[in-house]
Image (tube, rainbow, N blue to C red; front, side, top):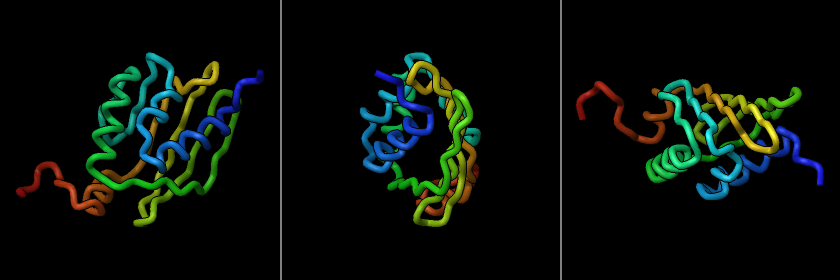
Length: 124
């Protein structure tokens, strides 16, 4: 059986993300994968990535609307927006059918404000 392409993996990752299915999302990652949302510290390993997504989905209702998915060899790039107008992109390095590195670029301050979450350094 032929392994899925990075573009196909990211497409299925988005479907699991939009269901807020943490267990399905984490299965796309290699055991020692790194997820680095550049507005946050890198998260390493499937258990930590699972914990990160569980926390995020408990705090905000997130939806990823795909604008583009590009592929180049072992890499896929996802350009996305959400229903509230936030935009960003994710870069995924896929090896042997698993995400080994994900970097996400988005505006953390806009995200916190859109979801009425506390802004670090500002009084409650």
